[in-house]
Length: 265
Image (cartoon, rainbow, N blue to C red; front, side):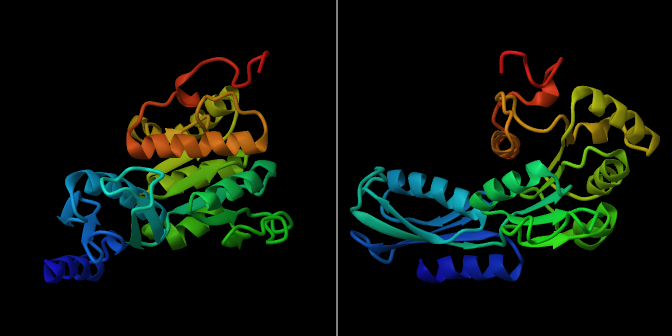
């Protein structure tokens, strides 16, 4: 079984596919291994079906974030028990988040995204705003036009990645959105009021964006949780990203009508 596990692991890594490996390092069944490939291929066992089911859930989450670390479980996967220590290794790069617009909301979104394990790039064509001093937690800060950045990194974007357009300016928004639509990025969110969205949509149609493309654009950005502050807005954006990625029902601002901020919020 051990050789089979490592054959699967080696094949996934050689093919550039994300894969997670869990190993019991303390407790009953020490040395047992379980491997997960995102196409729902599962090999091995940590001891029993209940334990495997719980650990597979955690492996999936760690793999999404590109994290490695230890978890503690009961013998049948019970939470808040420490009968077993399991080491979960993720063989995948962290998901990417590209944030266009060095605005007040950006710093808050960078902080929340880093907690979730994203590799964060902040991009703004205005060099005076796009500085590491303003965004010290960002992995990369670029002072260039969005379409140029996407020309260089767009081919690396996939379903786990996100583009967030926070600029509120059509001369930045439109090229950022149209360039993002040419990639396989899993999430494209755009900030602005419903009026801004309507005006921007007209410009996007003039730029060749069709109805199918519009289905990919989450605008106004974020889940409808009544967010007002930059920090609350950052949480609403990340909540929408998670819901979209996991296929869960979560009411988005895109689905509503009327003012984003209600009078009694």
